[in-house]
Length: 392
Image (cartoon, rainbow, N blue to C red):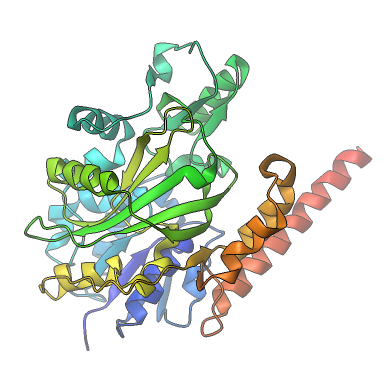
């Protein structure tokens, strides 16, 4: 039996990894870490496990994997959120005797996961970064708004408030955002908000192999986010590659000594016309399923590199389509229509291109059905709370 893969995190990020590995016939065990996960319902998953305590106790992942080491000897463990990436990096030596880890030890990964270290490294590399006003503990009072309040690591904030950062338009919103980050038990940084709509966000996707050689890359443009301006992608598409994004990304990864899949996000500043670095991720992101049709399948390349010990190869196809998180796009396009003010042609344009979907798949429909059931259940619960408040 060929070695399999343990995918930690069973939301949209995890589903993209599961389907990419399944295309290679790899057995998959999915570990769900949040109640609203749906990827573990995929037909390609042979084992399903829960580890809801991960985001409160990062070390629990190492304990869980050690308990199952005989079940999955030599299997690769794929993190799909920052907490699982952190756990594998911190316990790299401990777990490497039983598993194949397509991540690096903490001394390298820390520069990616810790937003403060990432920001400092990018600045010293010569990459333009947003103005950082300091940590929340400094009692900063910016002289201009809006600003972003970003936790050093955001997974616990997602579990508590359903968002990875906060946008503050004035001092009152700033203090409220800081209080929420503290409530989640996190430290945070205050950054200037880079002006411009969601479509100004571009992500350069590339693989760096064991020899430090970067693969051909793919540039992905975020068209719409949920929620707008501060959320995760809900619609994206392959875009023309600005050369400076590859140069900046490769240089940053070289400074870190990074190996593996990388996604570097930049935003075009509407005021200056220059690209500003936002962050880089060293694990799968939401729009991972957009990459296989382009021939730059970072998950498959990771498998070749770390598991098969073969040099990973990208085979660019020239495919230039869209990626759509269908439920999120429908819901947000209605809820934020007065904020986004999108025309009908803007709304439907991504659907007219060649496309892949974040969750929906006719060949693998159960994750979408599970997501729909969860959404309906959540909407009914919210309606019940509203009725109860009115009655009270």
